[in-house]
Amino acid sequence: MKKRFSLFILFAILSTSVVVAQQPAVIKMEDGLVQGTFENGLTVYRGIPFASPPVGNLRWRAPQAVKKWDTILQAKKFAPGPVQGWTPPSGKSEDCLYLNVWSPATSSNEHMPVLVWIYGGAFNGGATSDVNYSGEQLAKKGVLVVSIAYRVGQLGFLAHPELSAESSNHVSGNYGLLDMIAGLKWVQKNIAAFGGDPRKVTIFGESAGGIAVSMLCASPLAKGLFRGAISQSGGSFGPPRITTFPGENLKKIRDAESAGEAYVKNAGFSSIADLRKLDADKLPAIRGLAWPIIDGWVIPDDQYKLYEAGKYNDVNILIGYNSDEGASFSPPKTPADYITAVKTRYGKFADDLFKAYPVDSTAVPRTARDLMRDAAFGWHTWSWARLQSKTGKSKVFYYFFDQHPDYPAGSPRYGYGSPHAQEVAYVFKHLDASNPQTTKSDLEIAEAMATYWTNFAKYGHPNGNGLPDWPAFSDKNPVVMYFNQTPHTGPVPGAKSLEALDAYFKWRRSPEGEAWAR
Image (cartoon, rainbow, N blue to C red; front, top):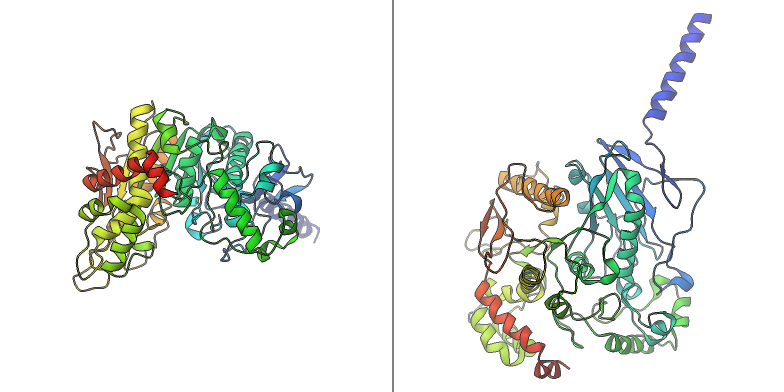
């Protein structure tokens, strides 16, 4: 009996040891202790705060330092996403400034490269808890993946004279961008404890996230926080405009403040103090899209002009867009609608653009949708690549995503390419291999993109691990990597059409073009 009791005690001790061994080590950060979970060979941390909750008097202020904590933070669940018009998987809250880490490191001495994800959502939505943004597949390729949250909509980008008066820099808006910068500063201070190397940080994002990557590359406040940047359907090289259009989304600070005053007045309030008393979910929506602004501080100027002058964070970039982005943004339903929209936006350049992006008499074909694609994404990517290859020392890698089924003639999708955001599931390797519609080529493209992206984080270029060579881009060597059935190189897509659109954007920066756009 005594022997059996001793064996029972031994079994209990061993069982307890196994349970303890299954718990990841506690990580000591500057602000406190944190513990994650073991998941499929990785250590995962969800919901780590990187700034104080931006609530109450901190609403519409730059993110403040997080308050230190004494207990062990169990980082096992995604925090709520920011307040927005839809509900993310983890819910939503004004208290949203949290980040997540997927780490393959087994100790803090491994100094692995770091990929930091910035979600999209037109700066009016998005959350790190989106299933497509889970970083485990990329982390298994030998990098740490971090996803950071930021404020969106009116809470992230409202400008107003009262808010500018509160700021030591006399500007307002761009709180969402300041959140991203705060998250990147957290990475610099803390990622080594998770096995990452703060000297090898690459930022990447899609849509608004890719646009934000472009803005961070131009912001002096982000200098030194990353060594590489990946922009998927991003770029922000259009001139400011009061009446905004895709690709011309930015306002100058004074125009944004005026719009903010109208927002407060139309909502029936007399001051920002009154709006701070409202629950976040009861704030009135902004007409149109809330968006970053040229404030002279976070975004110093028109980004095209900054790059022409060489005033940007000169890091290696990997940038591109999808073949049929225009199909995702309410394309004109009839040729007449298309013609009216082009004349309204482009004025005297409309006729040249009809030649470059023609429409037939009965339908709005892909050639017409491509104008939307290029105005919002293609021209920005092309301009970014050209400007940086001329004025910078770092390398540029340019891609075009065109992976899609060959839709049969007569089907509703005949003639369609790859829509906006389709590449995200490929980059994160979240394709469903059991889905009969997922082809062998889809899986091969996903593997190639995930490897190119993680190679870029590791080496500063995408090449290696048996992949087709991806040359650096320049005007003298305008080579683009195509993701279409297989990875292969080719010319800039629609280069002649881009040149016609470029003429419009150059005119928009002339005194005549600026006056016309007022």
